[in-house]
Image (tube, rainbow, N blue to C red; front, top):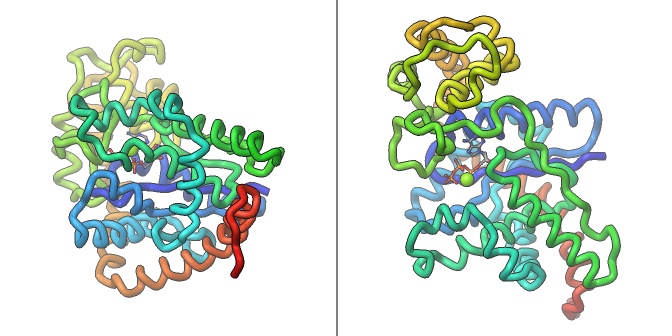
Length: 339
Ligand code: ATP
Ligand code: MG
């Protein structure tokens, strides 16, 4: 059976890209697992958040808020294992083993590091550099078979498979770690910034106008969509007409994802119409889709004690899966255990 794992960093608010590209898919996979069997594990990856040195109190708060957002989006602690990464030791333990498996040459090819480190690469933390190794450990500590993620994580998933392959080979253990499948599916695997059609929508973008946050109220959502960058042409008559128009393509994709339609269906409805009509319709749809999530998040945030309990239970369940796998790993690599 499938074992699904994915994580989101507790840094800042979830945005529409995280929702459409990741969390909405997590919920679909949770509901599929309820029918088909298998487990779904969804993690607030707080150790990853440390790579950008957040304020400690903020980090704790963001971790609880991310858990609330997960639940508000439809993840159910009775159906999925919801937990924060640092409460399960396996992640950090396996990451060290994998640091010794992964090669510097592989890490030097990681494009996200280059983007996030910026010009002054020498000053970036070693954690930011090693981040994809920790991500491989997150996944393989559970021998996860499937990982739903946005397009930007494709390269990190390939690294995960490279690490698994080398570990299995080096230690003569064929099939010890599975070849995890990335699930990069749907019409919104790469939602772009509302200000710049060449950049992905991101939590770490300095401009709040570049993204729609799940915490935004109706006015903020409407304003951000109204001000979203577009070209002056009306919507094209056919899908091909979107090819050289990244901003238009992005807004059509967002509408398709929010209304569970294909981009072709959206173009069919809006062909030849101006953005002055399309944008208010998109804003209404976004508000209608996000308002219930927003309201539920507020309720959940009012009771952090409840969230802590959910995360404690989730961590116990996750640990029960991962700890025996780590024991096996320690034996395989030759670490002496006398207690
Ligand atoms: P940061 O900019 O700090 O890296 P982020 O917005 O990329 O934040 P992450 O926590 O790194 O958020 O990613 C969580 C999940 O959301 C991942 O599966 C990632 O692929 C997905 N994701 C992030 N941005 C987008 C986007 N613009 N479109 C679709 N999916 C996205
Ligand atoms: Mg990211």
